[in-house]
Length: 120
Image 1 (cartoon, one colour):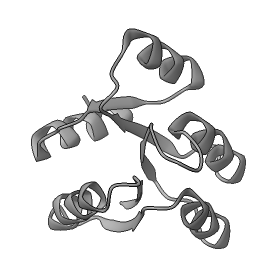
Image 2 (cartoon, rainbow, N blue to C red):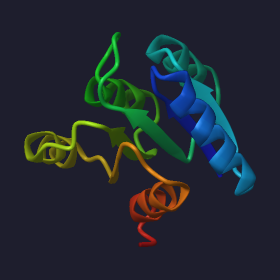
Image 3 (cartoon, rainbow, N blue to C red):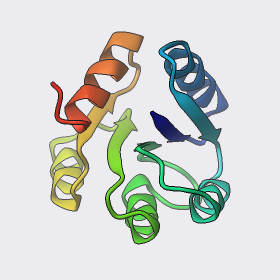
């Protein structure tokens, strides 16, 4: 599966690259929403987008809207340390397919991905 990970924290991006790479996925990680959008615009659609909510350039929901403008069928998992009822509701209303709360384990990330893909 082709996965794009976007989080302004390099350690989170590296962790996701390691976990998902070990599972056999092709993973591209970005700490900048601008670079990630450039990657999405330049290439074929990713199967899955994993994106943080709180980032300096765009928040996760704004980024998702722009990403879906490029690839509307891409599945999305939001990762966040701000798992408030309001944010989870907004993410659900936006159409986010899964939410994973930080800090997370490899198993929790995998469950979030399975949920987003309709497998869990």
